[in-house]
Length: 144
Image (cartoon, rainbow, N blue to C red; front, side, top):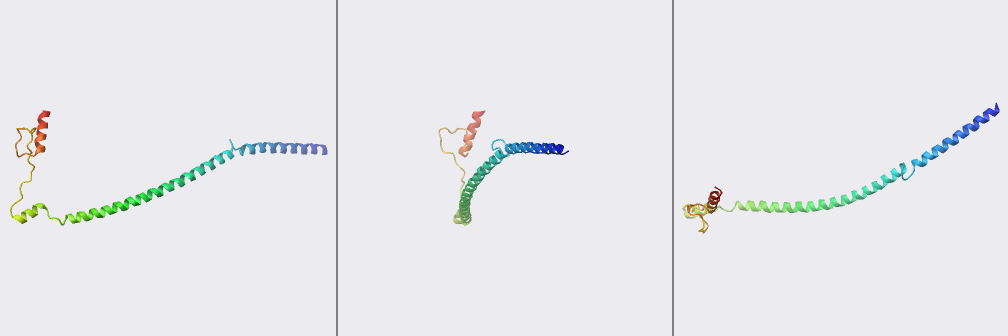
């Protein structure tokens, strides 16, 4: 009986040794730097480092853009203030028709554009038409 117990004890020890060898191989493959989890961890670590550098560069660029935007906004506000001042000063200037009507008592003269004497002007256009209308009539006649 003792002999059977020793055989079973030796068989158990051999099974434990084989199991340890299998676990050691699996652990070695698991920690392999090229194909295993160790490689994945090394790759992810490199990616995290690259992303950290990229984030720092993006922060620096956004800070520069924010400063440029702040300067442009300040300039735009200054121009807006100047424009408001100019518009306010335009309300103080009297219109030309009010000054002539109040100053001389006669209505203002007709300010319609008179055609300039031109060699290319059409003889059919009346002299009272503005220049741009006579040119338009010539273009319409040429199109017909």
